[in-house]
Image (cartoon, rainbow, N blue to C red; front, side, top):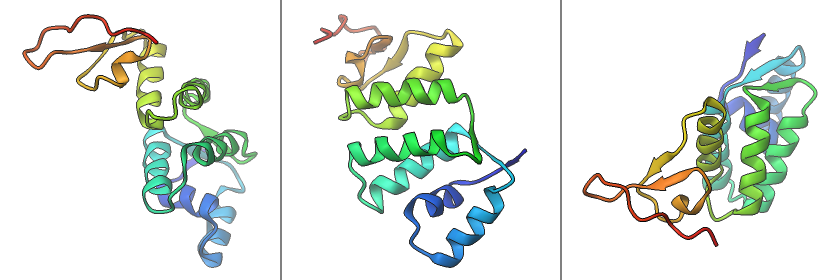
Length: 139
């Protein structure tokens, strides 16, 4: 199966250049694979350049998951990350994807210096001196 990069994925979603949209659709019509890195980069572009808000981004990711011609790397991980993102949209989708990738691989806890991210189950706050902080409350 062929793969796509983030600008192809962005064209399929943003639909802001008819020529590029047609080319992207033609390329993926025989099936295309989307890596986590491409999905993450595309979500960054969609939020930073196209100003998609969390709810719109969640809908977009869901549409990509359901696209008949796209196959996502570890779609089950992307679905789990999307569920996490919908529960706590203050976190970035990429943080949710990092966590769910680590969870599937059996590599938890995931260490972070981000206090907000550390409130997620499976994430542990690392103190600046290298030790672990007291476990955060899970409100």
